[in-house]
Image (cartoon, rainbow, N blue to C red; front, side, top):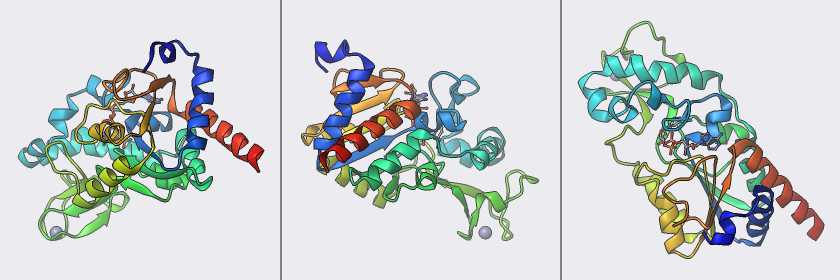
Amino acid sequence: MTANDCFMNPNDLIQQTAEIIVSSKHVVALTGAGVSVESGIPPFRGKGGLWEKFDPLEVAHIQSFMRNPERVWRLLISEMKGILADARPNPAHAGLARLESLGKLKTVITQNVDGLHQLAGSRDVIEFHGNFAMLRCMDCGLRVKTVDVAMTDMPPRCHCGGIYRPECVFFGEPIPMQALDRAQMAASSCDLMLVAGTSAVVQPAAFMPVMARQSGAVVIEINPEPTPLTGSTSKYLVRGKAGITVRRITDEVEQMLAARR
Ligand code: NAD
Ligand code: ZN
């Protein structure tokens, strides 16, 4: 980020971001919990984050789950189930889906497990940390929809007696091979990466923008707060909430593309 970029007004940055999107050939987005905040899903870190209630690194760690699945189901998973069941896409998800249908955005790499990008219409979504929509029996491997499992017994069990776990990646677990491969491919082949709503501290997801930058791409962040990428990896930070910011950027892109026709 240059000194000039630091002092640019957010409206100019929105305009500049739209221009860069229009002139780019291969745009990829990396999203985090922040893009779903306006859908009513709390993030881990930041204001109103789950971190204020407990340490997600501890509760959402695979070792905590293996040691005491009942506690993790009660503290984290059952709460997430209720919140996610009612969540609907917000203008950030809708804007990214619109950028894809305009032919400008190729892929969304998301750290979110809420399925909201797909619900908003995005087609090429890499779920870096899996999805919360399905549960899997840890004994027989049976997969069931999360919404279909009653929360009467904790932890919920399969008819074989095995404990169900969500098909998302706990801290301490590897990223699913196919998602990691595809994300690395997307990061190293894009010429622009939009990084929205992530604190950029969870690895290896936070390395994707670094990989993009190292491969010559421009990295632009959208976040109300700076992150470790700000001022180093990213060209600039468009400071603001993802919903209004992505919507305004997408409106600008749409107008620029229409004016070219
Ligand atoms: P994080 O919780 O570490 O950080 C949230 C980030 O979003 C912060 O940088 C914050 O400043 C920013 N933010 C807050 N409100 C915003 C808004 N309205 N618009 C844009 N940005 C906003 O999130 P993370 O980096 O994604 O890491 C958390 C991990 O927890 C992820 O791996 C994810 O899998 C998981 N998680 C997922 C969900 C979900 O699926 N919606 C929710 C919580 C946590
Ligand atoms: Zn089973």
